[in-house]
Length: 249
Image 1 (cartoon, rainbow, N blue to C red):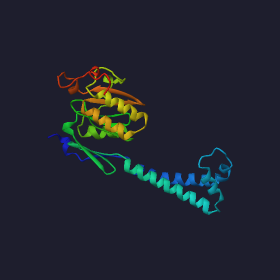
Image 2: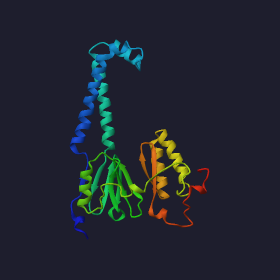
Image 3: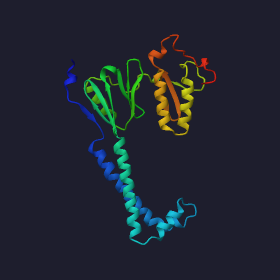
Image 4: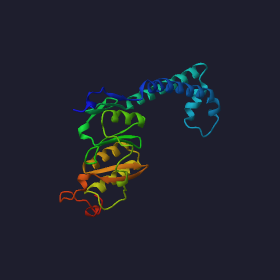
């Protein structure tokens, strides 16, 4: 067994500083925004185009210091809500010689090292690929690349500074030949989901495409795709041309 397996686990997270910013900074910003709103209600109430004009006029009629205290309190509460959401969404990566645990809110995912060929950070996503080139996991994160690279390399994982398959991606256009059967329809549906900012749908469609060997990379609202090694292998059970589904369905 490799010596890396005996090393203590390495945890990569935003740490106490991130929590201090979340729980200290956002409530303070909220308080400041509330104070500014209270100070500016008289001026805002005179503007004909200001949104929520009824609420602004109501605040302007409130007596002081209750109005200022109330808007500051609402701002602090809003800051606490944002801090709570940020805390729940922060990614914590725990690496050892055998596996990596990815924890976000109440969701935990564990990926074995033996199933992973390469790990890299691309477009603010931590990505693990298997030997077939398929994605085992793709998690959005703002964690520093240097810390992630050091953690994985310390425990003997294969870390890459960039996506090793980046040159294999092709821009998707409807009806493009070379895709597995059904992929074009899924990409059309995902394109609509991206246009409508339906992120959960786009994420689920990415998973569906991954199951048939299509790996995606997004640039803005454009989709780029490549095939896994298994999907590239010829076989009668894997049609690989969009010409076999001319209507895209």
